[in-house]
Image (tube, rainbow, N blue to C red; front, side, top):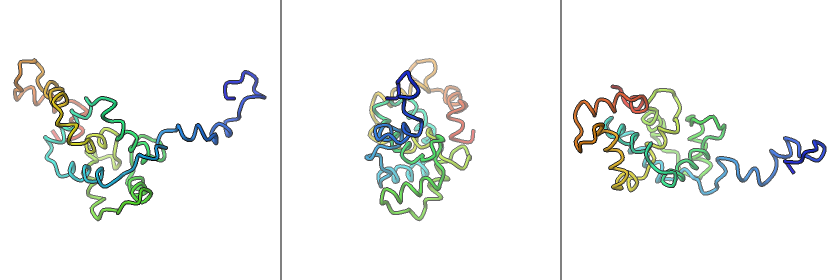
Length: 178
């Protein structure tokens, strides 16, 4: 219906927007993508980690496969109701309410702890780094991939200079104050 050559036979933009199939396929419509206690607990734990571990989790999260991040991406998209690619505090609170979760007393502190670049919002990379499951970042291939990012010369050891090079990378630097 949408690919009709004749404009008279083609669906209008409003009809396409209101189409049930389109609505079900749109990002953020996965009914299983819920902000549950497990995710909130991961976000809280991340806030309490030291800057080094937060940086390591950032490196790890950028090296995870699509299969490993699919659930968190779907949750992020479900929370990001305005589709701007960042989570505002109000969107996080609304998602918790929508999913029938208790609003943690420390929600403001959790969100501040996730907002590593001080933008006032949670970016996808910040959310992903904080919410990845411990089982994922402890997998040998994930750890090896992160280690390889630090071990620039590939000799099997990480020198202070190599470590500092990683910490100076823009995506990691945004996570910590170096």
